[in-house]
Amino acid sequence: MKEAVSTEWSLDEFYKGYGDPAYQADMERLNDLADGLDKSLQRARNMEAKEGLLCVIKAQEAFFLQFMRLDIYTSMRQSANTTDSETNANMAQIMKKYAAATKSLVSIQKYMAQIPNLEEVASSDPILEEYRFMLLKNREQVSHLFSDEMEEMIAKMNLTGGSAWNQLFEYLTSTVKVDYKGEQITLSAVRNLAYDSDGAVRKEAYEAELKAYEKIQDSIAFSLNNIKSQVNMLCEARGYDSVLSMTLEASNMSRKTLEAMLEAMREYMPKFHEYMRAKAKLLGHENGLPWYDLFAPVGSMDKKYTIEEARDYLVTSFRDFSDDMADMMAEAFDNHWIDFLPRPGKVGGAFCCNVGFLKQSRILTNYDYTFGSVDTLAHELGHAYHGMMIENNRVLNQDYPMPLAETASTFNETHITKLALTKAQGEEKLALLESLLMNTTQIICDIYSRYRFESQVFDECRERRLMPEDLKEIMLKAQKEAYGDGLDPAYLHPYMWACKGHYYSERLSFYNFPYAFGGLFAMGLYTQFEKEGASFVPKYRRLLKATTDHTIEEVAAMAGIDVTNKAFWRESLEAFGKLVDEFVALAEEESK
Image (cartoon, rainbow, N blue to C red; front, side, top):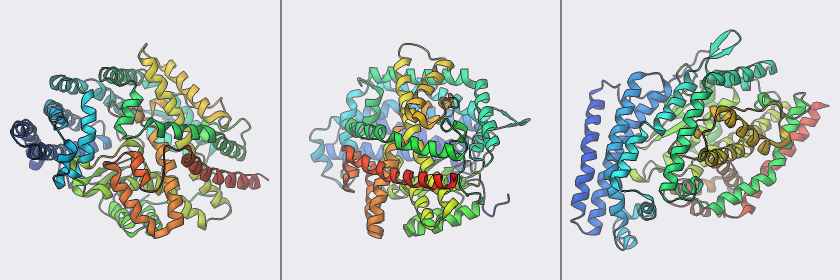
């Protein structure tokens, strides 16, 4: 299918290639800026508190800005082609340089934490005031740090530890050959067939996918065990009572908020099981929905969207929300921010990387021309919009916690589907409801199963090495708990641990419940937008901007929401419950 827009992203605004003199100069400059961290600390120790803080903060800003430019460029190239040996070599170089700077960065953290009257000092200067949240949080986190030398050693050892195991996972899943109908295709390509309109194709693709994991299951299981064991070891040594506690602290989120959300989700899961049983009946299944039909299209949504059509559809749909969102989406398509199509060596799934120093983002998808792929683009462009709201924050204030990371993206998904629903009738409406509920079931049931799986893996990795059969058993148990009688127990997915990259990060644990948080929090926000219209948008922008330097509870309070109260989560779930009722009624009519 020929496209009028480029199907691959451009990275020329970073560098023209590894041979670009600017790239080589920046690699050298990173060394100088790393040396500058120590020098700034030495100077700061002889200054008054305010001047000392400003000195080390400006040195950090310069170092991280340079590191991000090199790291993002190389990471993007690695995502687009994991088999590129030159990229892998350059990534290793950059990470070594960063690891070498760890000792200095930790020393600076400790210096900042011991400043007396820190809150008063932070109020004495506009730059320090912007960093108030970071400075106060840093003071709390320092108690979990080791000696400077030990932190440097851990960072260096991670290059051949957790980070290397993560790279092995990405390499294996992006290069494994899936035997399908006499051909060999990529894992991303066969997983995309789960959305095919032909049930026989979906089932055969599911079987081929499961079979392909057998080729790499031992190596991936080894990766998962070593990553989780490393995280467990460091978590305990740093004095956290659990990896979850460490994750919640990093997420600026209270356990009370997480427990309120999870409890409400458990209460409402039967409603999503009802949706799955209704879908199963539509597709002719008696024992619940088989896994291979989780993403089966229902109703009449056969339309295929060229990339150019997807552009126009998204820009038009979000013009109703705000001009700045629509204009940003047009820029993303027109200025080559997006890498669209699957190919050998390219990682699966989709992601967005904010590039604040360029005031842009880069988005990777595995586009298959369906409405689902358009929806995925809306999701990733939501991340880009979030990035746009924080791009003018200072360099060290451009990182938001995992749960809030999925707010803008899921808000976009809700908007595009709800807008389409207002214009749809009959089978098209059924298809749109199905698309929204299919995605919501993923962030409720599937995310809960992933949360339960990861919790058990962390617990059991302390005592033993988990073999592929163990991991499959744990995954199936988690799926049965989360999906209940909505799924056919004869057709689950024992290898979901082998195809989700979030399990394989040594830096981010429990990257699952943030999706549920994002989906339900976004629904609560969207309900406000439906009531308030255009007057909601400025509040939404302020809320997104605040995600980098406030707790989750404080951010939610800006919209009048108490996320520690189960009532809020119930209200959001009830909004989805009404959509389930509508789907079930339409499905029953269709079955007559």
